[in-house]
Amino acid sequence: MSLAAQASSSGTGTRHTPAGAAVTAPNTDELELPWVEKYRPLVLDEVMGNEETVARLKVIARDGNMPNLIMSGAPGIGKTTSIMCLANALLGSAVKEAVLELNASDDRGIDVVRNRIKMFAQKKVTLPPGRHKIVILDEADSMTAGAQQALRRTMELYSSTTRFALACNTSNKVIEPIQSRCAILRFARLSDTQVLSRVRTVAQRESVPMTPAGLEAVVFCADGDLRLAINHLQAAASAASGMVDAEQVFKVCDVPHPAQVSAIVQNCAMGHVDRALDAITALTKAGYASLDVVTTLFRVVKNAPTQAPAAATGGANAAAALVLPEYLKLEFAKLIGLAHMRILEGVSSNVQLAGLVARMARVVVPPEKFVV
Ligand SMILES: Nc1ncnc2c1ncn2[C@@H]1O[C@H](COP(=O)(O)OP(=O)(O)OP(=O)(O)O)[C@@H](O)[C@H]1O
Ligand SMILES: [Mg+2]
Image 1: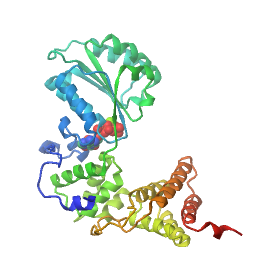
Image 2 (image 1 turned 90 degrees about the vertical axis):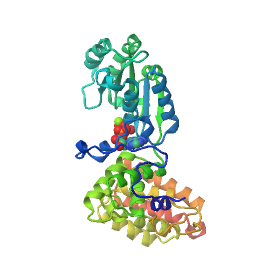
Image 3 (image 1 turned 180 degrees about the horizontal axis):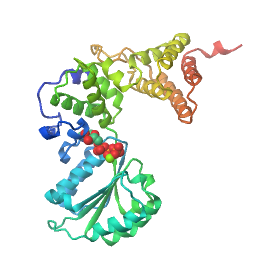
Image 4 (image 1 turned 120 degrees about the horizontal axis):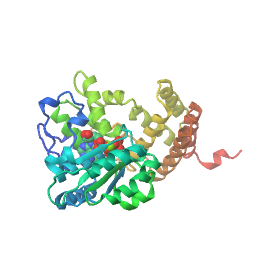
């Protein structure tokens, strides 16, 4: 079933995701909270996606004896949430006393490891048998190497009473000796279906009137980052006077409309370089950053079907009209990737985007035309 079809088939008023996970009921005291916090899962059952990793965490939560853990993965996919859920499940009401959470906003130099973490590890807390105190080091990749070195022996010395859970975006920024002391759990980006399911549930709980195309636009812009998706949903809902539709979402996400971008790709696929150049110039004149344009180009190409769909999806998918044969998708993805790299290196001029479009259009021009 396409995302559009799933979006439109949603019932109203349900409090459960398709996976059966109940969403935290909004508490009247928390009405001012941003939705990402209001709907932050409190138990592991509510965490979307990464089923294998979450299943491992559930086993740890059931059996106790948590090993030192490193959770690594992209932003906004549930690492901090999962650690918090695990700590809640393991320690219950003792969580306040028995958990020390330090994130990148805290000073985490070598002194903190020497003093605060050691003091916490030595502190006496009465816990149920088989449970340990937990030190949560969020955004551990931003800890200095010195502080990480100081952690090595601490981790071992206090292992009978204290366990460590580290969360980071890239595990290779955590020094190897720490990696070797921990079980590494990798979190993958969430699939579009998982993001859609959660966003739809939040929209229903908040009574946000949305068109299926609007929902799909939120999912498209988030690219697997659930935090971003929920934030976009809230921004679009507060900006819209009535129905939240795709236009509204693309406006608050500040990315080029995929319909415009897919028209550029379509023109390239037909060798109409002039039209494609005009359209890409219009985008840069409208003020979109080159990086946003190439990332949207890539998503449009990635999502384009290789064959025309048997039944139309009702126009909910903005890029639905675009059909690219496999070889064109491969070529376009390669060229967009190279341009993306150059833009990240700092060459983000209009010429860069125009060059990309020209190279994409060139793919479909027969080679003999270039012979002079
Ligand atoms: N897998 C998920 N299931 C349910 N909600 C999620 C999930 N991932 C993210 N969220 C939502 O996004 C918010 C942020 O998630 P979280 O803090 O766990 O991200 P993170 O992976 O730690 O990101 P970062 O690397 O930026 O710290 C949560 O409050 C929650 O609302
Ligand atoms: Mg986090």
